[in-house]
Image 1: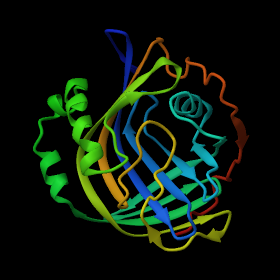
Image 2 (image 1 turned 180 degrees about the horizontal axis):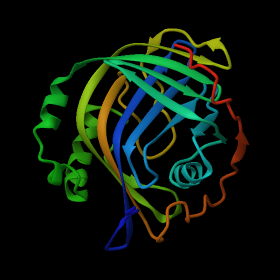
Image 3 (image 1 turned 30 degrees about the horizontal axis):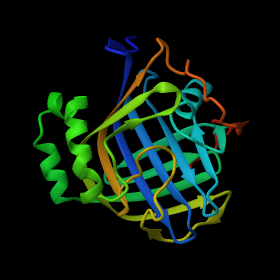
Image 4 (image 1 turned 30 degrees about the vertical axis):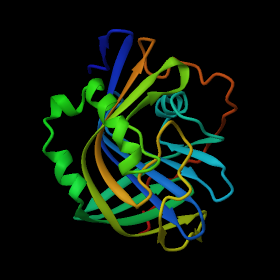
Length: 238
């Protein structure tokens, strides 16, 4: 399996999939990453910021947890089975203490424009640098290029944008209420998702100074890693 391509300052790791940003009436915001193509194979992860500001990463294994926690900032990291199932426009997510479902709606006007950009151009850091100048104006809180942890840099190539029409989230069995904007913006890295709940088809590229994913240290961050295994036979709730 090819894990990366060496370019310029380091190694580039390409993740192709989708990012879905969800807000709740209770105040919790969640960012669901679904990555069918990645250096780690197909996986999903969820970044959660609770109403009190506590930031939690839900990752499927230690490799993903280490890489993501070395790129973004969290107060707590939990490793547990993370699943995303898709039935038409309805997505069901199960990740440790989180159970969620959401329904993806129509493509936005910006989504139509994004689909018209050729993929090689859209995925280049030069294009990300150009779009970064306007992203924060069109979608406050959103950036397409920035620095990450451990001397890394990252850029996003958004390929489509659709609204999320409905969602419901539960945390440790407690209902978090109906769908609301992702407000205030989630604080995991240099960029948040759009304030309006949205489903973005995206290619994320992380450039690391080292040769192996997860090799960069999380620095001075304090990460509490807790494993919460779920029996394989446990049915996912919808």
